[in-house]
Length: 107
Image (cartoon, rainbow, N blue to C red; front, side, top):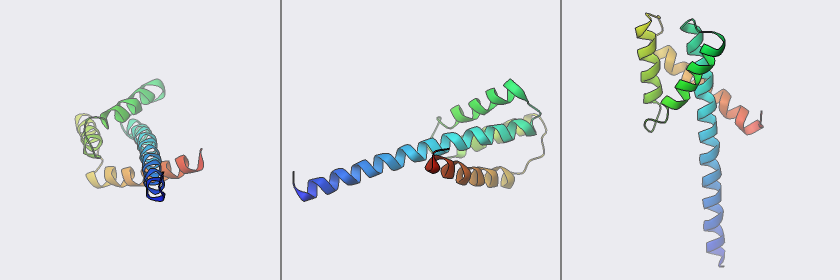
């Protein structure tokens, strides 16, 4: 194996690790986001946990965050919960930072 091949293999492994870390952080963010939204929707206990799982699954519909945003927006609108688009997106960003830090620290 040449030095170039070793470097390429190293880059591929680093990329795979970065993608796995990003996936785990997004899943964790979506669970936290789902619990936040559940509270706004008046859900508690098992219902809140189930709703958080729905938010995690919603993120698998398409690449990016728009599928999660649309789910939250539709659910808030259906229940007449006054939460702005800006607040949803801000919480998505803030909770992603928290989730990424948790994944990196192993907590």
